[in-house]
Image 1 (cartoon, rainbow, N blue to C red):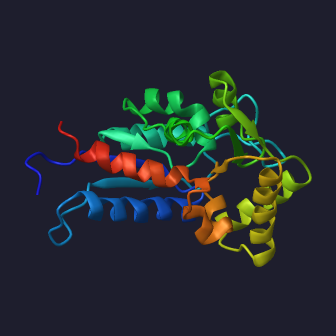
Image 2 (cartoon, rainbow, N blue to C red):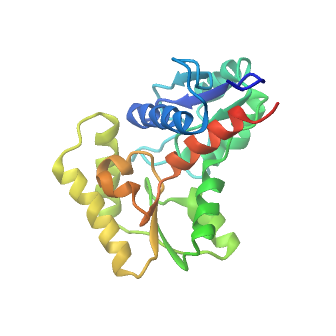
Length: 236
């Protein structure tokens, strides 16, 4: 076991619950790879808050309101979690548009999943990147535009169909039809010549299935889990 204690990971999750549970599972798998195990002690401490509401303010259509606004309940949860954690993670892509609000409320840094994913795109040397997300995935396309990274997204009506499929994953009620919608989204991007696809909503890997773990995709939730463990076990 390490000579210094692990840092405590504060998790602001719950939207959706399946994605948060997936993040927790991945953290434990990464820990088993990076930390000498001894019974149940070889894992960083995690304090997890399941928000049972959207993390950002939504419009009447269920899509994030532009400009993005944090839900006040998210900031209250951030204050509580920040008091007992060393750093925070948010296993939700769109919520990173209000990351700075969360950091101020928590008094702690938030590990930036968006930066991790974009850095991975650059590391892989993709010339054109497909981005799938909830609605218009501005949380990725805006920084990509600033950095000069070429990207492709899907449009309506497929975008609206994918949104509906994402909500069904949150409810634990996705069907083969919803999974087929995600596959159509991937196929559409591939037809446009992308080198790979960023799965820019934490529910989309559930729809894509096992292929989401392949090198054809960047799965930000896996990158976040790996980075969270590495930060938790780094020297204080």
